[in-house]
Length: 132
Image (cartoon, rainbow, N blue to C red):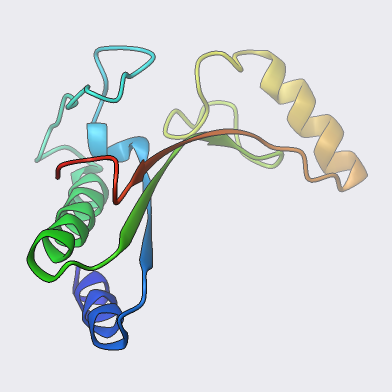
């Protein structure tokens, strides 16, 4: 949180735009898939990984507050379901359901050849497209 505040203060002072790289973790453990832009999430503020989730939500809130209060140009990019070739299939935090059992073969093949194949999807919320 302190890092986000410091960078927002710097961007305000220098009058430059700033980007927050967020994640789908801001939605918590979703009850709806795929998540529409209007989905507010299913948040557990005291779960085992909640400090990460809450940190991302806090940073996004700070960014939008700086936009509202200081007119700062911001961008918030929410990165979804990123999968890399050396990740474990059972890592439910980042491996989406649609990859399923094929990911183990894909990971082994990529790791053996030193490849860098990844599957990802992104969702972006811009500073102009949201009221806050």
